[in-house]
Image (cartoon, rainbow, N blue to C red):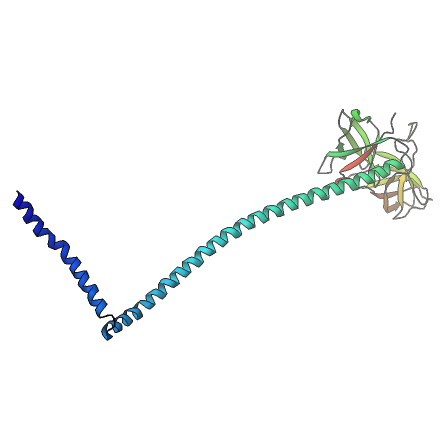
Length: 282
């Protein structure tokens, strides 16, 4: 057994020694021949052959580096773009809020100016509902009996007459617009002082009836409330001097005693946002 182990070691040892000897001899030859012409030529040829490969590898490495930088730059720009877009959206919303506040403040100032000119107590109210079709000539405002509002109180804007309260709840009031066919207001033509009755008609216009043919009425004349009672009423619901609208046409009949004027309301009733409820009923 011992001899077998020795024989096995002797047969395996050359397999380790031979590669070492080969590498050693090769290294020694290269060391001794490094300055010979053959080695220098071979080195030059090998170097020249490797240069294109090195250039390709260098270009590939540079391209890969640029691609990596581009991807990183795109990610950074995407992040910056998202942040800037968010800032723009926030600034846009803030601008809208500021404009709405400025508009609300301007409307409040205008209504306060109108309130100071009236001899009655009044309360400002937002318009909270309207008929978008215009078939029903009513709006709903956000004040009611809790604010001292009563049926037949007059409703105005900074431009003129809106209508009167036809129904009232604790926190709301329904307003019958001056353009409704059931509305009737005693009126005067501001220049000639011609008197008549202004009523609503289908659409967004008014008509002024019972104007004597002898009265001078023309397009462009301003029509105001007369402050006079109609029929058997003891007093007018509308104080004198509120603007109703402007004459746009006059219809005269040769055989009639009266003429009719077509009036455009002073108030843009389709775009009302805030009104003033004048407490004329006590």
